[in-house]
Image (tube, rainbow, N blue to C red; front, top):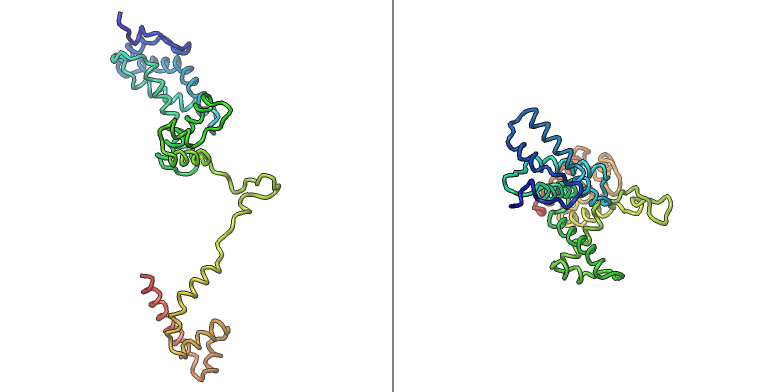
Length: 263
């Protein structure tokens, strides 16, 4: 007798024999009866979904949330399973539920955006480390070991290993180990405005040198001597209005030259 969805043996106690129910579900139109049978199938297979979820615990997500994600994957499996293809529901549901959980980690558990390629390298390196821990007990696998096991380049392995360390971000308020009351943020510097000032002065120096001597004198007295326009006017024997016009002209000329150089 050929093996069908209703006669295939189940390897797990949490895999109920629901082949006939799925065949009946496929033939029912939308309505209360179909919805009730669908909900019953989800309930019967929920222990299997939770068993799959348990495999992913310890990765930064609560088990309760993993149960919810696995249940969502189970519902999708029940809704899209086609018993006419002769494939046991469990064989279809396991990768569907597992894929849903993996997507959850990929889309929601990374604190920072990480390219899909790097996420894949991280997962392959992580799996290799687990497998090599059994085959080479008592020895930490090297980059070369992992590369040979995964058929990745050593640079790709290093990228995956770096990603293993940045699955979650550390708060700047986190206390530094061995330094009570000292947060990580306390060790970070801040931009020094003095650097910007040095750059600005270096950029404007040749422009200032090109100004007429009187304009250079007015700028020096105004911004380095701290003199008002009125005092500058008295010292140079010109009107305050004239000083103001000369300053404005200097500013316009310097601005134009700096912008032209930047372009």
